[in-house]
Image: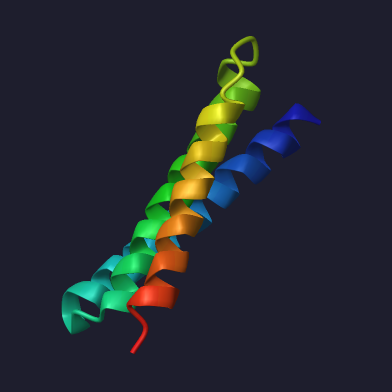
Length: 88
């Protein structure tokens, strides 16, 4: 059961990294500010997924939940800022 959990955590991290890379590439090509805020969001979400993997499987005795929540809040906050103040 632990193998399935670790596989899911790693696949979520990989999906976030792929989205992040695609958004950064699109931003570099078009310089659309909304793509920038979306890329920043996915950087934070990828960090959140990596911290989840570390928290649950590598360091289960240390509670990384506050740090995970901060990275998720930072990502959603960046995306919200982009939607509200930078949308064209």
